[in-house]
Amino acid sequence: MQRGTVRNVSWGVAALAAGLLACKPKKDAEPPRPDPADAAQRAAQAFVHCVEGGNTACVRTGLPHGAFDAFFLLGWLATGTPVAILEGFSRELVTHSDARAVQGKFVREVERLAGALRGAECAPVGAQPMGPMAGQLAKAADGRLRAIGMGSDDMLRVVEGLSAEAREGLAEAFLVRFACKREPYQLYLAMVPEGVRYSAVGLMAFLPRFLGGDEADFDVAEAARSKTLGVTGSSAPVPDGTVDRYLPIPIEEF
Image 1 (spheres, helix red, strand yellow):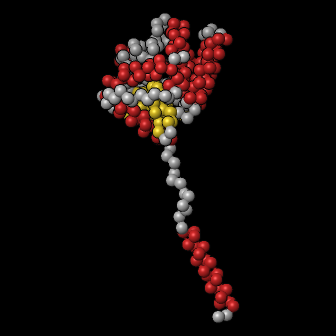
Image 2 (cartoon, helix red, strand yellow):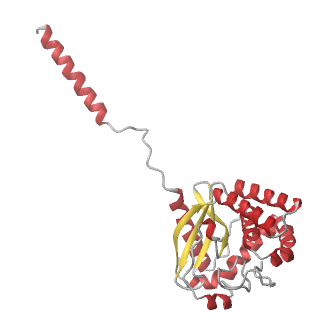
Image 3 (tube, helix red, strand yellow):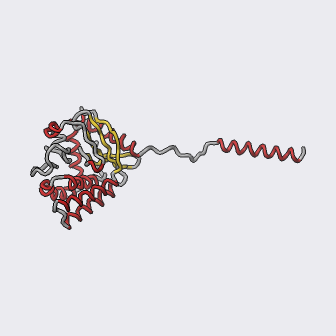
């Protein structure tokens, strides 16, 4: 065989081998990772189904419920009435210092909403990362307290502490919003990663507009009479337009 022919055959074999290697799938290729926001929404929907079924094991222990409570308290300082803050904030700080009491508050809130959720036909419609929201709430609470003359050094240190706790515990958490056809009309669930799954650590009925909160489709007069949405037994700020936020009544009841 001539030298040129041998060279051509060698090149042909090398080209064939290269082609086969290019077509061979890589063993180390990883499947695409699921969107964490979608995973949080699916887990939140499963939690709501659990609550609707009356399962007492829906709330898991050993999770950062205190971080959500800190987030919620910051929201209260940023949007609640001065009278309500003066009357109830010290009491809530005492509860916040007890991890079991904070978890018990979440359990009671779930039990309170269980009956309404069974017929409300709620479905998740979006999820927001909670880490950045904690910083926004702290800034809003700081500004609000200064504006209403409650920005003492002690109060502002409390805001800093709550902000640090919320940012740390909710750094990878999502706040999942549910839209419902009936009362409670909307719901926000805080979901934190627990290994490969997400678990609920808190809920609220309303989210301030500056954090991306939406207006639920409900009648204001009906909301004022509602035990789920209105002033009685509500653990979240009432919707805009329901009552005057500066009336001397405890709008936010915990």
